[in-house]
Image (tube, rainbow, N blue to C red):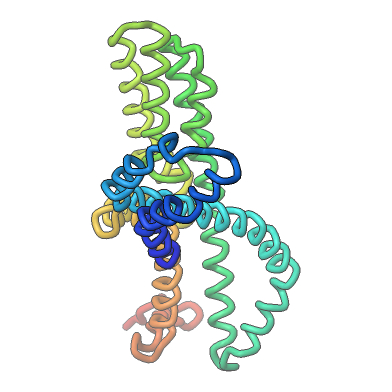
Length: 294
């Protein structure tokens, strides 16, 4: 692209010279062959216009070329991803067990049972998180739809379910849903009052999602206390922003798996100490009450 840009500047800079060549060489030939007079072509005006605007013309052409090249690269990248994703997915699904066996074979023999057990437990936890998140999305879609129907919105089902599906990304469902519902309400009713009801519907749905749906449908499935779920999402957002909110719960669940394993290892180690001996009750002789007698 830079080389093409420089060449465009060179071509634009040589424009006035081409006018001189046309005037001194080509124009006499045209006059002799086709009886075209020099006065019919305003060469001086063309030369002056080129000399005055050649820099801007070259810059505009270079800018257009850069924009076209960037757009083409983006399009090619998108097409490449579209082609590569199914291919990579196919080979991963076909060779997944082989790759896992190879990874497992490289583990130190003493660590293999522990690492495999932790990996399986983490896989179960992440799968439970995804299933719970799907239930949260469905529940939010129902809440949005019912609330917008009560408002009287004609597109309540479409907007509500789309907002629920978009809730897989934190805050995206809220922003998409409230924006679309506000525009639809304004076009349908032509009044500002329904916008307040739309905002109330989404506010109540978000409170329900944060205080009950996510802790109950996601937290219980991955073994996290509701308070831990709320604080994990808040801490992830404060520390890492949008990405932290998105990954807070699965990362917290994996950390809890590791902490439980560390706790079990500690309880079974010599550092924790031997198990407390069970108190043994004194056996009394037949006919003699426990505790002896005089």
